[in-house]
Image (tube, rainbow, N blue to C red; front, side, top):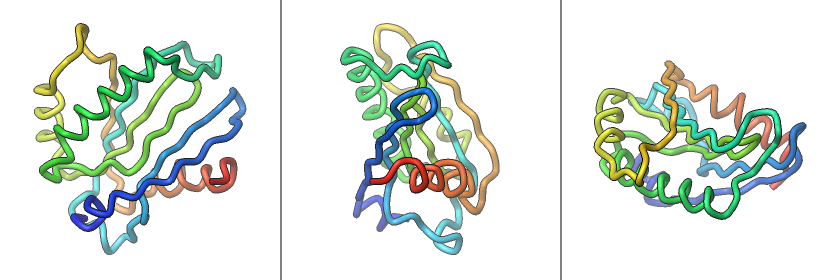
Length: 150
């Protein structure tokens, strides 16, 4: 896992989704199941910046806020390898960060202690068991390769 963070190679894919533009950024190489021991829980963090169903992408101001949040988020939970960011999806009024961890409580504490903007970040968190990283492989990357050629 440390090697993946040190290499820090990202691929960007964009294209048309049913409701408009979709942008997906994901970290490579995608690790095999035997390489991901200890990071068996998926932590999805979603920031809805526009109403769902309109296909909106973020404007410049929102993009700046999302970028600042991501910098604080990664500094908080990736720096000590509490979690690893594997993908970032932006489409239909929301940005989603996909992390893997086994230290969910620790991630929560670190997220709560992050520097905040003027207002609390409007995020929702979802955690579920995913020891094979199936969400990343089947829901994110499978669609990227089929719908969004790099």
